[in-house]
Length: 387
Image 1 (cartoon, rainbow, N blue to C red):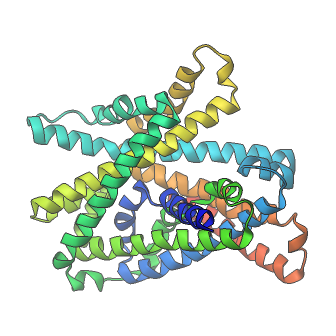
Image 2 (tube, one colour):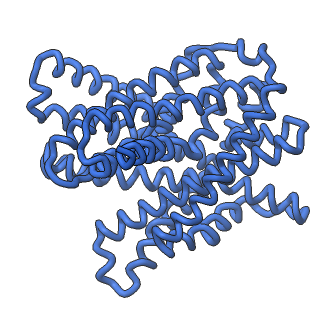
């Protein structure tokens, strides 16, 4: 019984940890145009939608015998074309997220160098420290990333706790009263991406021995934690920063931590905001880029080559680096691209895969799948519109 409880707690933390990442740094910048109240309801709606698609993936996963992943699930339910589509979209999603984290790290490193030395480096130098220092951990493999990630996650939690402790006294209630519901649409793709924990579900199914009831509870609780974290973050940032400061951050393509550290005249808050941004980006970067490296190495069978690991790392980092160097607003743009790929992979494909299962043959369940599919198509159109 104790073992099952420990695994359930571990499962909840896996779901929460997979969701919470550097994407939350962009959320207040995107939602500032709509205001707190429209953002509040949008978060709840997007969470419910992603919870439904997560349950659909779980049902498909439980129906497939053996230990399977998203790509093999797509192959078994949608055939070879579905498998190829899933493989391609998954690859693009990992590239988009890696590019976002490289872009997000750039102003942090540049400002740190300027604060320490007084030297203002050119913007193109910004992405390289992340790749040089932390890309090395990805090259060294899963065990090294695991150890360094544990330390960084502890620091991330401490930095977030410090922000939550210090910021409430700076909240201006009139800032939270602004609302423009029509402006929330630009934020929806990134909000959806912020609940994109679905790729961990096949691993959880194996870990929990296909215990459907326990898995459903884990997914619910594990996804509820990020929702609470995001809503607190939204309340604090939108309540502390004037809208024009967040709009300036949007125009510059930087995260909410940049105007926060500049506006609040408190060295402890600035310190916590910069470190929270740093740890959020690094932990997300390590996990996603390691997954991308392993995905490329396995898919292209690079282990057969002498320099296979080196080739996989070059293929992992060079394309997103080029994207960041050519797009000055790379952080926001890459996250919006990620939203498109999430809408396809985690929004549209789950109902398509579930359509093939016998348990979804009843008319009312079919109607539910159609509704989810139509909403996913709307999301895809929305993402394309704002890219």
